[in-house]
Image (cartoon, rainbow, N blue to C red; front, side, top):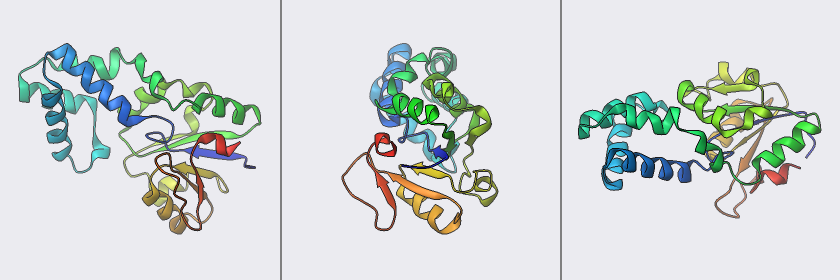
Length: 203
């Protein structure tokens, strides 16, 4: 696929976020001696306390879990921050190969992610993708569909996202961009929207 600029969503597009979350819950349960069920319950309760799941932060969650179960919040933070090199294991298998090939072809690469910056910064750093993507081309904010955020993406860029709602919004709100739906879950196509099922489809 010919394009000079490609911006990728991060969670569930580059990173297998659901598998990573399961591993983080397992690690938290192990280090705190809580059950998986307790950790899961704590996560759901914490998310319910936020305006949106996009406002998740490890610091806030650690405090919430510590207060709920009388545990040391620093043990939780270890899983998300200081002892988090395992995150690189949860990139989808083709990601680094595709990013390397695109960069080798001279394509400018970026990230366009809806999340709290501090949390996402750690995940992005630990994932290893910054070998191919410069921080100047990484946009992270819970309000990623705000027009002032979209205006920071170069015109005529491909924007690859797993969330069909985001992609359809881009179609109507960002006419200078070319949205691509990365549907990793099914073989479905989106009518009138470029659909891929692996990043290799970009090559």
